[in-house]
Image (cartoon, rainbow, N blue to C red; front, side, top):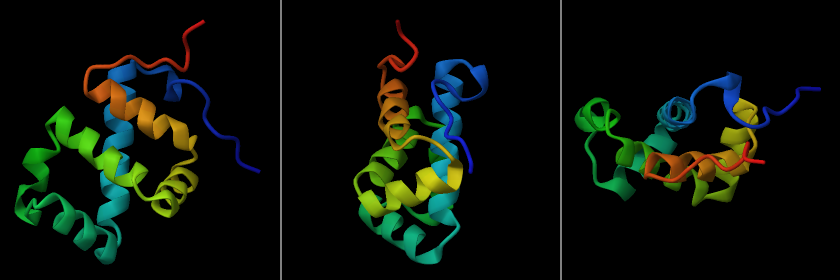
Length: 105
């Protein structure tokens, strides 16, 4: 049985961990044509713009919003990446200027 990651992944800095999770989410979306098509349609971004957009924290936060807004997609992503689904929103909040609260005493 695989253990879920708790707290920050691999002891990384919170922002780096959040960006890594968002990039993993983008890869998860892009791995399946139907998922990617839905994401592109909902965001209005063109496939040729994704690489440039992925450098922007707010775009990455939007990727996590997209994942979190669809529970089956969220659960599939979390299982595939062995992360707690709640970390998706923690990472999203961090990317838009919040703090990673999971490890706070």
